[in-house]
Image 1 (tube, rainbow, N blue to C red):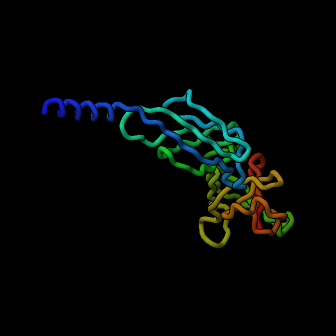
Image 2 (spheres, rainbow, N blue to C red; image 1 turned 45 degrees about the vertical axis):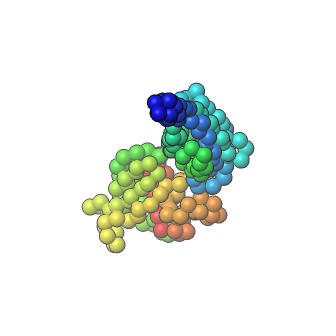
Length: 200
């Protein structure tokens, strides 16, 4: 009886101490274009020497050995010089689609901007507005000197870079590929250096 008990305990100890071979896979895409991103560095957050890069299709495969009977999720870091750093967890043997947001030169904070009314072609004076920028999210509000109809909040949405290279205000990520922006297209243009929004 003692031999069976010892044998059973040895099996349990072996199982608990056995190493776990983790393998995770995934694909890295641009959050706006949905196109794959090549040469993205992907590594285990807890073991930075365990690294790989995405291929031309944006795909990666990362493996690691960790101690323990059960394989825990792998904490990974996704890094590219042109994109914001991303961290996520993938279950051992799992597959994940990861979308990255491009870095931008969008200033952060609260500012006073001017609204230029394109439909009047400069015949109407610009009015001021309060702009709150957080990441690529924007809120445009009236100030006491704005005096527009429609309530305090004028716009709430995203700032995205249009295919022309200009920054636009939108709630539809597909607007980055439309042919016409600004003017009275209902897709305002924002200029950070001039602190100006082209409005209709």
